Each structure stands twice: as structure tokens, then as C-alpha cells.
Amino acid sequence: MKKGLISVLSALIGASAGAVTVGKVTGEALDKAKSMSDKHLALFLMMNQWVKVKQEGKNLCDYFEKNGYKRIAIYGMSYAGETLIEELKDTNIIIEYSIDKNADTIYSDIEIISIEDNLKPVDAIVVTAITFFDEIEKNLSAKVDCPIISLEDILYDI
Image (tube, rainbow, N blue to C red):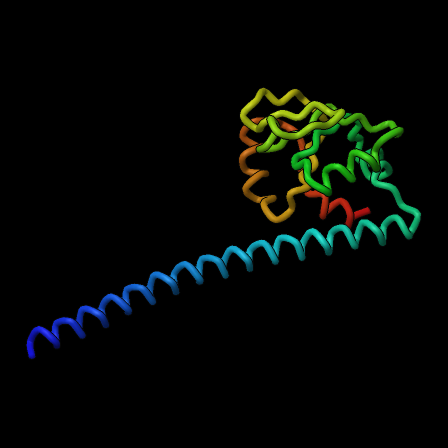
């Protein structure tokens, strides 16, 4: 009888441990999915604001000129970074370089460097990775002496 009870208890403990592990993995997957969902919602809303700015006939070049930013760097070379480069093409605003954590794997006509590299002086750095702005700003401010601006802030300020 004791042997049977021990077998049942072992099975229950094993099942409980398995359920806890599955619950933990499922919880981590849900947390990651929620984080990605929040990030993409923020990017969607920012890009939607950009469309509204364009529909109003405004241009980001005007913002940079108004603030005296002639030479800028862009942090983040995903969709928003690429769109910003395209927006500023053929304007008086010079994009000196871009900064991205995946600098080695990205191709662009603009020089792309890592945050660990030597950052040349510019008038401002525009951060397109808006969901990580606070962390990026903290890391950049230790390396540069220029304004570090969120693209989202620019789009709502223009």
C-alpha cells in the first residue's frame, strides 16, 4: 500500500512541477507577446501621426531647420529610420550616420555604426526606436553633447 501511495504522490508532484513549468513558459511567452504588441501599437500610432503631418502639408525638414539642426544622426534603422532617411532625402538636412545595435547586418547608403563606436559630433540625434527611448537617451547622453530627440516628439511638435 505504501508503494502505491508513493507512486501516486510522485506522479502528482511530477505533474504539478510540469504544470508550473508550462505555466511559467506560457507566462513568459505571453509577456513577450504583450511587449511586442505594445511596441507595434506605439510604432503604428507614431506612423499614423506622420501621415497626418504629411496630410497637413508639413515636412520634418522644417522642424530641423527651425531648430538649427543641419547635421543629424538617426538611432534605429528599422522602418521608421528608413522612412526618415527617405523624408530628408534631397533636403538641406545632412544625415551624417545612423546608429543601430545590428549595424553589422544592415545595408544602407548611410554609414551605420554601433553605439559602442566613436560617435562623430552632430547637431542632434533622432531616436526612431521610440519604445526604448529612455534607455537609449541615457546611453547616448554619456557619449555625446547634443540634443537627443524622439521621432515621436518631433511628429507631435511639428
